[in-house]
Length: 391
Ligand SMILES: *Cc1c(COP(=O)(O)O)cnc(C)c1O
Image (cartoon, rainbow, N blue to C red; front, side):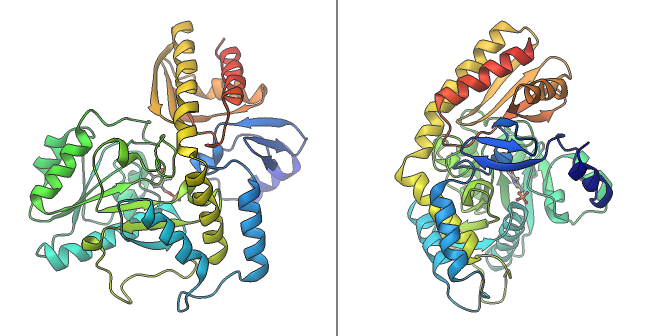
């Protein structure tokens, strides 16, 4: 262990099993550790570093904003948050925005918004239907919303008002809907829970059901949004516009921002009902505005789509070559590879030795979330390392 790693073990709450390298610098799709070793980054800050590391447009926007105005309270108007809100609304099906600081906080706000809607329009309905294998964040309420026992068991009793049903089964949602239901909350494509794709027609059927019942559809696009799956938002590919959508991860290329977006009819907060001290912070929003503008103007979602196909076909070839690779799945630059045995940790270690960072999604699966600006050449480099590591 290096000096810094020893200090981490001494002073930090041990909530993560970290990869044993200390990163000190990043550029594009590459990062460097304290010994000067270079790595190709297919973890991408957990799908956060959309424009890669230290992209010039982000560096410039942040630098200028830091020199001009770092923070005010939301008692005052500030420009970067309004610019970012306008760009989000102009490029999505939603009408209004609220900014927080993380994904979990955005989802908490979305649930509060749905409960307000329930009080105003659904006779006090407050329950939210979510799915198993979902992931909605680490706050207590979002742990309750997340349909995975491993996140819930250590913290019971959990806040009430959430029911989880099987993913990819609209009948299960119908069966769970009662007079208490105010919304269904889904990731269009489950990320942390396994990179699980929605079945043909699933999201559209859920949308129809929500319309029929007059309840809200909340899409958690925290991982899938901002071009990750090959379109600016994943809902565009599935014919299911949300009433409320949450964003975070890739929105500001690494600065902390979370956002709740809502259609006008679902946008029912009134002054004082929700808030955040740091949310909409000028520096984070300047990074978000620069990131989103670059993504839109340079069709970065299209790049994620094209390079994602290249990555998918390379992973497919590896599946043909190695019998213990049982599945390759995903969309755009959010891909997973599954094995017949629990070898993901040793594959991650073998890739690390050869200079490639990948995420262990499950004991038997890897996840790939490189920057959206990555090239076919860099993908080939990663595939070559993965090939050798699987060997
Ligand atoms: C990461 C993630 C969250 C939580 O975001 P934080 O910023 O870690 O709070 C919520 N939902 C989804 C789909 C995520 O991928």
